[in-house]
Every structure is written in structure tokens, then in C-alpha cells.
Length: 314
Image (cartoon, rainbow, N blue to C red; front, side, top):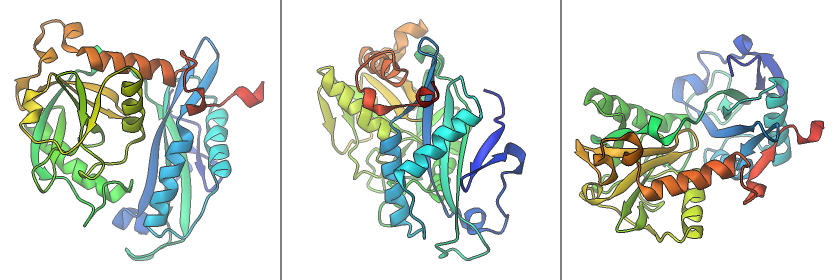
């Protein structure tokens, strides 16, 4: 998908180049913006576009709006109509990333709770294979924000300055992605994705009280792992466990699954192979296959997680 024709702004379809917000709005000055990132997947066999886990993303959107005291309430029906209507208007027949955002307009200060604008945009983003996503990660010096200061379970724009600082440091050291530790030195997550490890056949991941986003993709993959008979463990994770794991991957709506083949310059168990296909661990690949088939509607399982965009037009 090239540049979209329209972005939805306050319920109206606006030409892409005309969808703007004032430079002195609290959204720009202070990052007063709540958002959700979603993906929609094109199934050419069914000639259908599926938005994945829209209801769960909207649930988190509502929770963050309440926590941030935004002076607005939306219904799931209205937001769903906005998403589906935008995709239809842009005649999307490809994989896309979606963003829904509510932001403080006007010229108020950092404690302004309104007026609130709403936007929804979709832009092309294809998956690629696991072999094209092999990732080198490094632990960064920046510590992950915590619930007592900048709650990471709230999906707000300002929180991503923490991610930005970590990403810049990681890139400066030659890594693709950063790994953040909490103030207590425990493993948290990546810049914009959760982290999962495989140790002795178990899928191990930091709990939701370890400075991470309560990720929809994380929840999806943990459920899929259990269905595949993989033991799931959620707990505090020490830094040295990163070097002891057999496999690791980042996960999130945007990145889907990113196999980590090296941490702090040390190859992981599966990451030591010479062929790219050999560098992806068995459990990572199992989860990717299950996830891929689910989001695209290749599998009939969990059909309730997929919102069909064009079904009502036929």
C-alpha cells in the first residue's frame, strides 16, 4: 500500500496531506496522546482483509483514556466503524498497520483534559519471513520507566521517549534492538515490544508488573503456547538469564515476532547456526506458524479475533 488517500479525523475522511494538528496543542507540546497500534492482514484466497483483535485493542484504548483523564468517551461500535470505514475508503488490499489516536487539541497546558481529537490512519506494512527479521539485541543503560512515574501499561506517546533513548543507544552500539532493565535490574522489554525467552523447553517472560506494556500480542502468544503444549512461566527475569536461554524473541503488533539470535554480542542456542533458517529456534517457529495462520484467516481457529472488513459489502 502506498500513501493512503484518506485519514479519519474526528469521524470525517480527510485527504492525507490535510490531516494536521496545531503545533502548540498539548498533543505536540507534551505528548498528550493516547493511541493503539493494530494490524490488518489481506487474505488473497478469501479476498478479505482481517483486522486482528480489534476488540482487545479497543478495550486497552478505553482503559488508557480513563487513566489519562481524557474528557471523552467513545463506543466500540463507533470506533469499529471508523476503522472499517477508513480501510474501505482507502480500498486496502494489502497488509497494513493501523493507528488510532486520541489527543488533546487547543492551546492548553500539560494538565489539559480536552478538547479531544480522534484520528485513525492505515499504512502499508508487510510481514516478511522469520529469516528476514533476525535480530541482534543489547541491554542498554537507560532503565525502563515504572508504574510510579510513567506507567508503561498506559499506551501514551510520551512513554515512547524512553523507548527512543534506548533504541538510539542500542543502534549506536551496533545492535538492532534494545533490551531494557527495570530500576531493580530485572529484564523488562524492548523499545516497542515485549520479550520472551525459551529456557529448557519453557516459554519464559517478565510478568506484567515488571515495567512492561500489557501487550495484546504477548497475551495472544502465551495462549497459543499453552495450546501447543509449551509450558508458560511469567515471573521476574534476571539479566544473566538472557545469556542462558536457548531462544528469544520480541513480540508486538508492529513487529509480530522478531527472532533474537544474539544478546550483548553472545549468540543464543539457535542463533549460532550458519544458515539463516537454522538460526530460528523450534518454539519460535512453532509460535510464528500458529500466529501467522491465525491473523490471516488461514486457520479457522479463533475466528472471533478477526474483524472482516469487506464482508458487509458483499
